[in-house]
Image 1: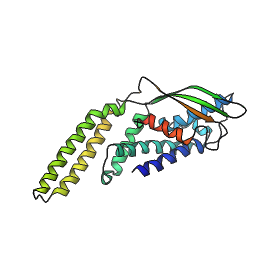
Image 2 (image 1 turned 90 degrees about the vertical axis):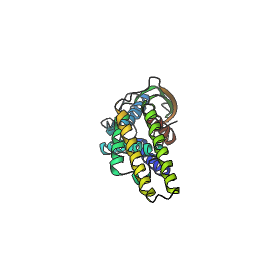
Image 3 (image 1 turned 135 degrees about the vertical axis):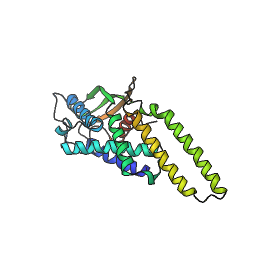
Image 4 (image 1 turned 45 degrees about the vertical axis):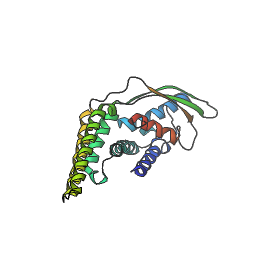
Length: 231
């Protein structure tokens, strides 16, 4: 699962920056760079591709958004340790929809951006506001985990006493746990709100770089912060 998540994130980064042409809008190199970063973030988290389409195609913007929300779904399954056999199309679709709702509520501000006109080098300060989604689900998630672990122990003890239906009961427990987690996520998605205090990050900017304005590594960090997966 971790390898898959890494591959998915790599694909997202390629779409966010490296697949784009250099920014052309705005009056200054700062304006152009800021517009480029903002357009990539709008496409990534809101599915808003009109500004992104100025730098790449509308289809690639839609592909970027789809990649982001799918990454959210797989990360949630990994975070909650949902068994691979329970990662059905229905579960992935439902968690993807949760991702659309949650990410649609994140906010950001480009606090400051400076780029040298001659070298194209500079820095951008981003104020990032992820949501409180993971905090909201925390109590119910912990309850679901405790319930699952207690029931799992009972099944194991029954198996040691000679029960012959242990495998069936364990499979049923995995499915029930998965359904509980998905329902919890769905229950709190709409209630999620941006955090009140921004996470401020400073990133290097390379306007003329082959890898895009912000490096792959930095964008990985932005993604995880905005999805709440940075801790």
